[in-house]
Image 1 (cartoon, one colour):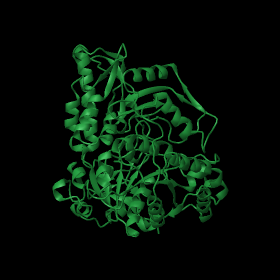
Image 2 (tube, helix red, strand yellow):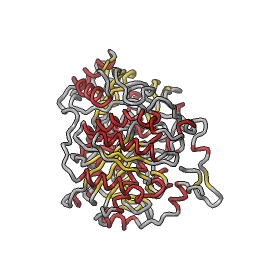
Image 3 (tube, rainbow, N blue to C red):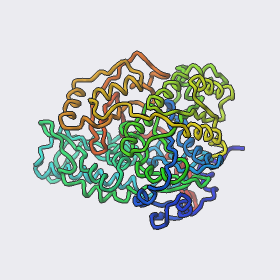
Length: 565
């Protein structure tokens, strides 16, 4: 008998009223704003209201370098949160919001999967409470004010060739990557080249995720750099007098959204910064509330440990002041087999037939990636646990091979069947995490804030990616020098690179060595609070595939959504 779809499972779940979920974690009714029966926004006053309560153990869930299919990190995050209830502990979960671009594209939604989901499924994967639209509107309000400033005489002297602020849309649309603005009559604006990114790639989204309160968000929005003058001076949203309007549009979006899992575990679903050019983590405010709501706060970091987890440690934790007690590294048989170099996995296509055969030797051949990602966690003084996300095509001998690799490093591991069995299927992972989190660690940042931008980049390249060094184009060197002259040198680094390799080259699987990291250009997200060097060609506006999910999503005769996954 086939397993029900995620949507079918979600519709058959027994959900509690959201005020009961809030009450269970100590958030009173006057601090919640209900959006229907099963979703609420939580007022930021909850941060002060709960601050005297005990702190939960703080756990970040990350992964080995993923395949294009993903390795079930969100599913594992939710399964682990549910699992704590099965071992007598209370947990709260914090994950990013879904972007409708991937939901209607090839990736699907971001609610988890199987019996480890956040619900309501349809709301989470579509508009939820409108935060994505608020970020889109605020971002585009600033873009409109940039072009209006140009039209009215460009008093600030913006160089048309150095305007960095594009427009955004929460849709996958490759035709908008590069466009020409201002065509038509004289009153239609100043003609110039522009383009669109997806909303998740907006710096305003990163600001939402990293702000600690409304005042902080307003200041960060004002610090956004929209471009430069011919002499290299930055021009900000504050100088354009646009930041106030942006803050007004995003005011309610800063309140985190409270939902629940299929097993009624509380889950904050808030903010969705892009995992390539931003830090790829859910919001600071959700964590500042969630850290006082139970025994464990389980949060997810995007992509592999070299990306989302590294940024969690060096960017998000610097802002929040919270320190992690343990990390979970999700590993799958299929990903480790792909890191052997023998197989090529393509999103939307079946796995290669030979990859589905029992072969623990292939798992061991790709294990260098797991070892390196575990080392990357330990490089920050945090102890990891390996969560083996079991899939129907796996064999116990292959899970055992993963466990052997972890054990050889003195690291615990457990097999999780949380997709099929919910929290009960991740109980062994929860036990292992609870044990690690009970012990003191020596958490530290990878680099000091006062280090030069180049020193920070080189620390990431050599210590986390395994590169021999860094090569900068003349443009990148000029940009780094300019950012330090403009006072941005103390900002942390967020390297934009492929998620499919520890290196900058997606074809280099496993744990490559003997390469140098090429930095093509460097951009500044001053409002969000980081510098991002670009290594390779980063697509910040995805395109649709030949058969996107959108072609299967519809309404049935009774008005129910079908085809969403």
